[in-house]
Amino acid sequence: MKSQHQHSSHYTVLSADEKAAARAEHHRHQWLAFSLTLPLICFLVFSFIAPIATLLFRSVYHPNVQQLIPQTIALLNQWQGDKLPNEQVMTQMALELKVLAKERKAGQLAQEVNRNLPGAASSIKISARKLGKIDDAILLHQGQDYLFNSHPNWKNKAIWTAIKEAGQVITAQYYLTALSLESTVQGHIQFKPENKLYIDLFFKTLKMAFIVTSLTLILGYPLAYYLAHVPSRTANILFIFVLLPFWTSILVRTTAWIALLQSHGVINSTLLWLNIIQQPLPLLYNQFSTILVMTHILLPLMILPLYSVMKSIDPCYVRAAGSLGAKPIRIFCTVYFPMTLSGVSAGILLVFILFIGYFITPALVGGTDGQLISNIIAFHMQKSNNWALASALGALLLLFIIILYWVFDRLTDPNKLKLV
Image 1 (cartoon, rainbow, N blue to C red):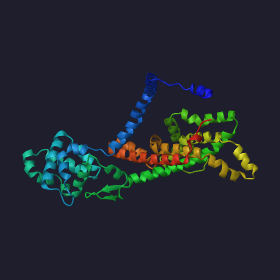
Image 2: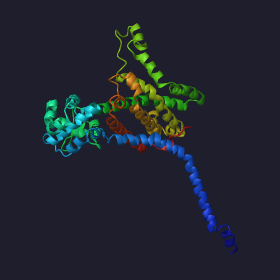
Image 3: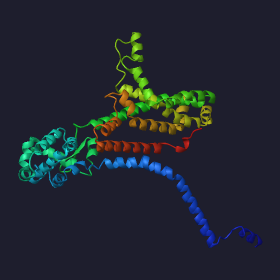
């Protein structure tokens, strides 16, 4: 009984006030921890979450045409598309084209509709210029006749279909365009073989990303193995050369490659001087130059995770396999290489994702043939001002990266990715 009493005396019963004070102190520590992480949370929201949310929103939200000709779009939404719109739609279109001509906004409507129907821009601009000289009272009663007289394309059902599609505020049209698909007036989705530009660019980007990733793995795996097994002093010296590209501007490295690969550059001049070739080789402004330069730029990102994992592998496993009679090739294939798969997958993920997002280097050394999907996204944002299509292409690229990361997460043990 005495021992039980002594044992129970070790437990302290807190009063209600003490419990309340303990809870208050706990909440105070929680708020303090939250306040310390608040700047990081704000940074992530404004620099990562908000841009991605804006990208996804702008890929489906496109109110430009609806704001330019709201009444015409409202009437066209009731149009079934089996024949030309009725006279009321034609008249309203003529009236709103006159307003756009007065406000000098007809070019904006022409640009938007022309994306769905190439060649429609001239029809809209010519009609707006002609209808801008007609009185509203006359257009109100004879709008259809004046619209038809302003340009013959208004008798073509295709231009009305394009205007209706462009006038949808919430639309998946740009995703369909990115995937070489189109939606009919009846709501059916069909393949558009004559517009395979973006699909071809996606596949070309993935093909080149696969080649660059494979080359960095082939070149980086033996080097990472050597760095992981040489004395630390030698490894530290060699690592200076591995990390040296990170200390040099990407533009400087790219410019250096241009000087090497151009028609009268170092490589071609040397080969001509040695009489190995009779005319300069096309080493620049093609897929070859993009693959070569990107392999050089991304190679360190393959070496680092491989070295991290290889350095942490206990050599006893290899020695044990050798003591049991296994030959070197079998030891490598069944013991050593499987233990480096986490580093391999990490390097592949880094190189692959960074490659498909690069656009400066391919733009400088790739020319027309070496352009990637990222270059087209930059083009639509900077020059064509088609932000909706650029956002849709970016969203599809983001979806692919998420799928790739999910595969990486299934194959990789994060606990093995540590620096030693």
